[in-house]
Length: 177
Image (cartoon, rainbow, N blue to C red; front, side, top):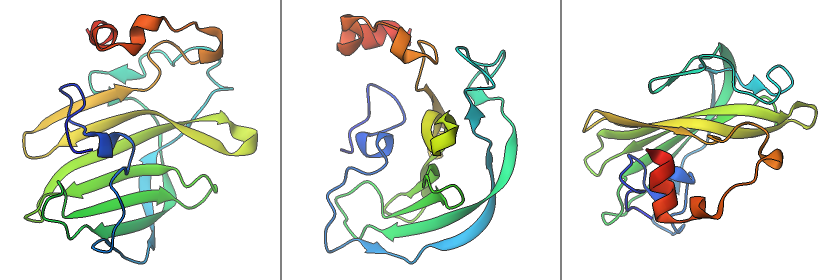
């Protein structure tokens, strides 16, 4: 779970938030509620069938921001064989989606190593369902970042037929280029 994903700044554990096996060494701290500035979720009713013009520029999403109450939860890993010594999660507490807006990961020396900022869309605003539309993975040690667009084929995936070759390493590399 700690190997890099196809040359990106994320490992499997980063990409899916948490795949590490939970064990007795991990200490979770009581979440604290804080008001924080986060990207405002996009509403698909406002942008039906297409991404807003100029929404992605370089490795940045151009979006509105808002103050939201988030739960800040930290966990000490206490495992010298694991990538991280500590992880901090920023979890939405307002709309009952528990959407993870960001994660900070610290190396074994306690220095900030990787950070993930997530960008959400309201697929079904009437049911409070929110999903990741993209994310920015930052490696603070190398100064490199990777932008993930979770939906490169368009917003209406139910109307798109995804070719089989997208599910091969060769197809993923072709799509990445």
